[in-house]
Length: 184
Image (cartoon, rainbow, N blue to C red; front, side, top):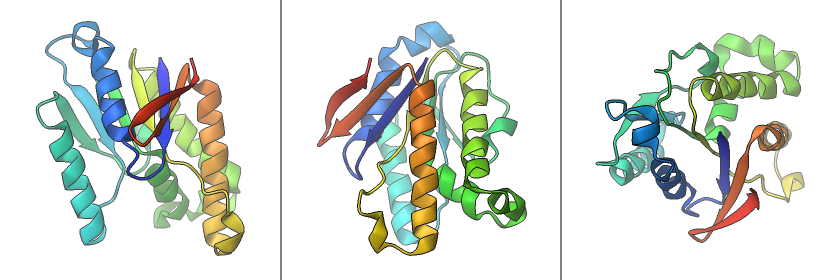
């Protein structure tokens, strides 16, 4: 089962995703000896991102999550079978795949290739678990005021989110800490 969880910055989507995964009976379904797997995609650039990473780690402390930092190439990850997985977050993963120096060829082939690379990784994760929580953010509706590069990124992210939404069994938008079902 893929559950796409979206919301604005600071909306509570990460806590909701963690708690959703735990509620799925993850320990019993995945095996008591297996931790939940938290796949972190945010690169620790600068003080602000390091603080956010630390806040998220503290927030998951004691919940049974093993953290795996993976900034790109999700499709190459070796995943323990049936571990409950939380992928945080598609926004960072899309940026990492879009701007990586070693794969300019993917970006040069077009925006759809970047989206497909992200989707390939998500499909890979979903094949190895009964429960996959995918956290993403929303694209600002006023993209015309941004640079061309930012608009391109937002377009890729929007298309990627739509395709994940098609794949997802369930979608929830978290608004001010309140989960609002979108697709049940």
